[in-house]
Every structure is written in C-alpha cells, then in structure tokens.
Length: 193
Image (cartoon, rainbow, N blue to C red; front, side, top):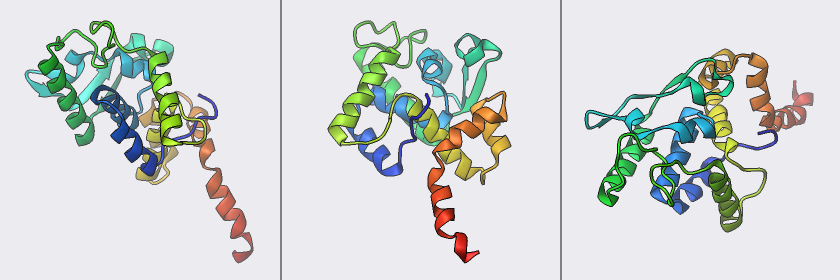
C-alpha cells in the first residue's frame, strides 16, 4: 500500500502487548516473513504444523501469491515458531484445532479465515488506542519486514528483492521510499564532507 510505513520497535512492543493471541501471531508472522496479508490469511494449520511439530518453513500456494506465478516458501524464525505453537495450543484448548482450518480463524466461523477488513479494523483500533501516528495498515507488516531485512542484509537490494519475492528491483526500491530520514541526515552533513 502506497504511503504506509513500517512499525518501529517501540510501537511493536506496544502493539504486541495489546493484541490477542491470534492477532499477535498474525502480526509476528507478517513482520518476520514478509508475506502479504492475503498470503498470511491463506495459511492453514496443516501448512505450519506437521507430525506434532511446527515446521521450519511455510509454503504459500501459488493461488494466494500476487500475480499467481509461483508459490512462496519462507523460513519461520524462532519467534514466529513460538507464536504459532502458542496459537495452536490455544486452538486445541478451545477445541477449534483442525488441520485443514485456517491458522487465523474468524471468530464467527472458525473454518474460515479472519478477513482483510477485520485486520484493517484492528490497525485502526490500535492507532487510536495506542496514539500511533502516520499511515499504518496491513501492508505495514510487510514494510516492517522490508525495513528490517534491508538493515540485516547490509542494504543489499538484490537479496532484499529475493526476500520480498519481487520480480523487479524497482518494486523493492519503492518499498524503501520511507528512508527519507537518511537523506535528511545526509543533507545536514553535506558541508562536513
């Protein structure tokens, strides 16, 4: 989404503390995998849970990936695996655990995923309750992933392009348009060079 921004580390702490287990898991997966919201909502329990254990990588089928050219397989880090494990334990206790059901279940019908609109509403509510500013929405999760991966990958655009599964490097560069503060800092230092 054009104009939305990534979530800061301080905001992340506040947001995760304010969310229920399902939404917290969704936010963690969004920020650690870079999946788009439609990709996240397509994940079924069987995609992340095999033989009684959380998988190391999650695969999203081609039908749910933008442009539908190929599926995506992404590693789940320890935080994501732990969040999924806690969510699955919650579903087991609530007796809403079925392998072919969505990982992010709707409250109304557990056999269906929560909707994009419901997640957008959660962002709206969080912004209001936590006094967050700027444009934050579902795509902010992917932008957060991009922002952090850019740093972890030592600003390697080609690796970031691969991590985001972009066909074009131009799409990856657009994700980094929020790096205006780096330009502002450079302008301040221009006479020091």
